[in-house]
Image (cartoon, rainbow, N blue to C red):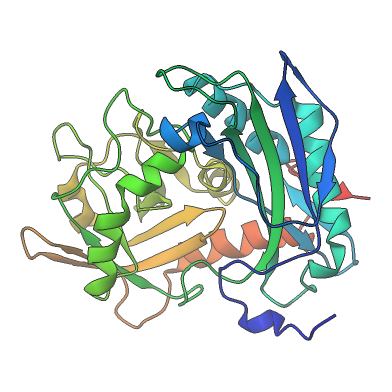
Length: 339
């Protein structure tokens, strides 16, 4: 195997040995297939290409100090993909097929699971697409479920260091009653222009506001937002926000650490009152926010004056990471061993 500098891995794609696939045809799911090809043969009229019938998940597997591989909260990813499938009128992947596929993908590519202590992990990308042809706007009758894996480092190049973010009212990520709560590629495509503008301005990401009134915090590009003040972990409540499994876990951990938790609409003006702020998600884990620049008003909300994450962000990050790697007791029963 080629030498991999595990500690310097970016969050990007690296070719691994195998991926796993399963087709839904004639009203039922088939058997898992293993492929070494990085390509998919798609019908020219596949609904994924024309009408956006596509949903995906992001998951991570970790190697612990004991050498065992742990998979974090896979059942929640399976449930969320099923919810996405319902929202896009796609065939739902049963839990047993989902689990069999992700476990097989990990085991077939075990040599790519980063070693304990490297700060890297094995990223899993389950993907569900409408592979059947339709020219009229209607759901496909055939679907393809795939899982590929790749070793990754931190999503933001800064790692667990505060980043700058930008509020912009010029772009919307998702509309109320739309697909914002579905992990569909279209939501990310809708945010690309705003993300490009942010990156050009030296920002790590965009803080989107609600599309209806532009009054409330929505999402941080590819992640959920949280703010901390008065010993309270506060995260937005909205039907257009993707239900983050990382955020769901942090709400539990925060309470366990003695914090209060609130899930509620967060007015943009409240950004001025937080002591700490961050973005959270499978890819980012926790990315502390050092400052948020309001692109319209020129205001700057500063959360880190010394370039370091705040104390609560550190505690939350370390507790979550230690559960994922097996360094802390898994008191919530979140890990599954890959054996």
